[in-house]
Amino acid sequence: MPYTILMIASTSFFSDYGNHVRIWEEARTLQRRGHRLVLATYHNGDDMPGLDIRRSWDVPWIKRAVVGSSRHKLYLDVGLAWRALRVALEVRPDILHAHTHEAAAIALPLQRMLNRPLILDYQGSMTSEMLDHGFISARNPLFLPLTRLERTLNRRADAVATSTRNAAALLRRDGAVAPERLHVIPDGVDTDRFRPYDGSPAWAAQRAELRAQLGIPEGRRIIVYIGLLAPYQGTNLLIDTARILTARRPEVHFLIMGHPDPHSYRRYAESLGVASHVTLPGRIIYRDLHSYLALGEVAVAPKMSLTEGNGKIANYMAMGLPTVAFDTPVAREILGDAGLYARRGDADDLAARLELALDDRELAARLGAAARARAVAELSWDRSARALEAIYAEALERRRTNPVSAPGEQAPQRPAEYEAPDPPPARRWR
Image (cartoon, rainbow, N blue to C red):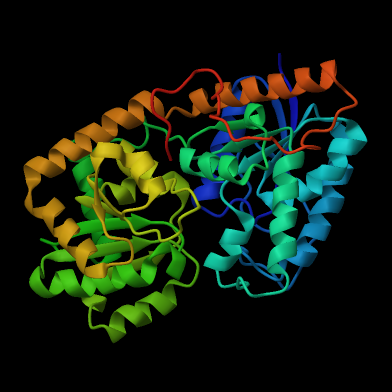
């Protein structure tokens, strides 16, 4: 049956990076399947076609996207809470779907007021993200209260949908989410749009034009990256890797795409003497991303975080790009045997693995084909939407049959393996 869904996203949607792609693709796929969806989000960000977006009150001194942990979110979330309340009273949603823990905190009073299920779309630990961003330290007196708040939000949600098995394992170990409320829904990808370069004259001409626009010299072999630019994403290490690799392989070029503040990273590349081998074009519009990725021979995923997902890898896989990543549980979960892995935080090892992918063309072709096949078989956004529908139905039924019980009043006594929604996965990853 069709549902009315209120999504709440405490972020500057839409801003062309990983979590926003997940929100957008989930929303539009659910709409295609007949559900009404309204998205409450911050005042800034791009509008997306066909999506009913309700924005919080305007904050004139903040026009750029607010990425990650920020003190500005303290008042931005107040504005979003007011907007979410107004929208909830207007549309009377069947489902409250929160992206991020801040959004779950905003949705929690609505869950009680309307007696509607709250689904937490879990992209990673809130407190771990704050540590990754340097927003707080483990010695900060706020760290323990924030950790407790995060556990409370996990426990009070009617269901928690993680994007990786690694995140689900961490939640099971923590014991804050009852096993029957914990699900894994990996990031998907549009494999019709994101597909390997086919060598056709039209595509060849487009690649040549785009390469010229970016100022990448002819004959350069391109390594591509897309994502946020930040130390915990491995951006600094990636430029260090460019210095190491291009010193012995001058034909190699790094196309490092994303935001915020590409200017700082251009200056860093200049300081290392590799500016002529590194292109940082800034933000890439999501609808054009496949064209940029098609320029690459190899893709790289140097993310350092041990708790967050890594959705960009799904795009690399669909493009059939051999991918080199730092060896983290999430990267292993996504790529499996279809990737190459470097020691986490080791620029020399990352350079060596990238060089291997460039030199061994047979290996690169085999890895790219395996990654593409895995993306086509397992990463449909429609598959993700059907899994969400199963979670919604289960949460609504639980509230219908036991309306007086609130989820998570008692933490589970022992961890247990999660049960994924329909269809059950052969392999789950992000």
